Length: 160
Image 1 (tube, rainbow, N blue to C red):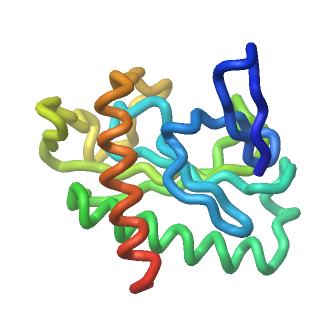
Image 2 (cartoon, one colour; image 1 turned 30 degrees about the vertical axis):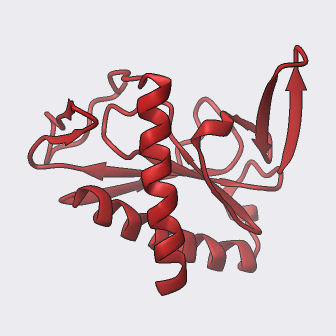
């Protein structure tokens, strides 16, 4: 994990080779960084990004795999605590960003509301739309969602 300053004002964080918005970082661990997905078309979409540069899932070390499993459990538990998803999809896609990262995609049989906004999953239980519709949250709402999940991750990190 490293920090890069651009234009002297905005700080961005990188995990491996993937640039992440600082406000969306939920947790940094030894091997993985958990971050909100910029597209919140499905409420609570997050990704776990390998901290070291690596483009092939098959090149993860045994330690990274074990840590990924632990981090997946924590994230899943936090999302259940926040929004009670009806199902989860987990996917290594790496189409736009080659850096190894796992998407954790909560799925919902009924709409959920957060910060006064309604989030529906119109394709449930079928495959979500590809390409996904884009829903970028206002910074204040993104920050509130990130803070909620950070708090739950702290709680669930001690339990899981």
